[in-house]
Image (cartoon, rainbow, N blue to C red; front, side, top):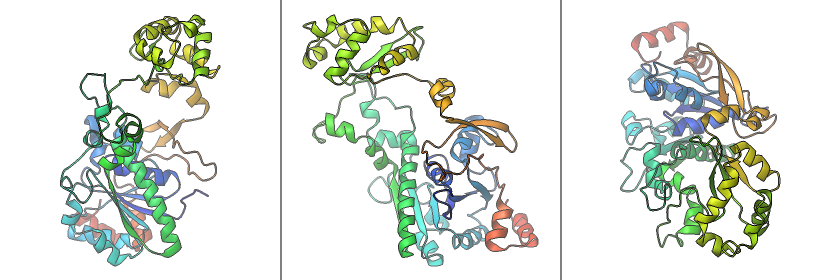
Length: 396
């Protein structure tokens, strides 16, 4: 049985931060019903010029059911509130003030379902001088400090590639919802959960704060990919844009092993590199010495030679490599999924492995694919009632 079998989630989230969290719940067995507007649905459906079902939308909404309700219409709002009585969780990440304008806030929903877990993601939270500001992933990363430590030393701040502002916030919300659900099952009590994307990003900044900012007394520096010689990024053949290996030798034993495997035992006794301080002071010279070895090997060859003798390292995998990497392939990380209109597609699976506690990977829903089934099952609506609601535009 999936771990969260029995949890029911009314999912009013959009874009990525909220959908990432509710998708994790769905992957672990929760019945997640995504509520979209009748015309266009989640804006993520049409990202990058897609007419519908963009790859972006498909990747963050797997394993959910989908319904269309116009919550801005009187009949649609009433329908949503009736549905809320049948769910354990309502999740939303609309812009500041939208929920309040729609009059479907926590107090309204709690009056109908006292045990509801009402989960909210906002760019800057529900209080404070920035609470009215809108946010996206990059905004949250800038506000959370991630830009400031990324980039070349002495250069301008750089946006980190992964969407930790969105998906990182979503994962933290999923954990909070799961914890609240455990408490709800014990006590019968619900609660309102709030998560700030800015604060979610700071979770990933703790190492930098602890090791490089003297507990916040100064700004941590940008150091690019370097974390202390000989830990660094090294070029490999054929010297393409992502032909690099990252080596992180942080102990004396690792340093000695690295020198042995690259057939340069002389580096161990070289006065320039004999100590941590010396390796740091002569970092550029050391980088050049190690690069002579890496440049003669592919990134996978360099990784294999070093990793097999205990030196932590990895080839720099690009997004194409992720689809073809032999290790990820061997672990069935990329899995085929049948989509009702697009045919067979391949997706990255849930990274959490809990044998027997996960549901199978399923395609994201078509716009309004499950509207009738959900409303009939949860509210016992008749065909005539569904037709009337559809004609009025309240559902689609």
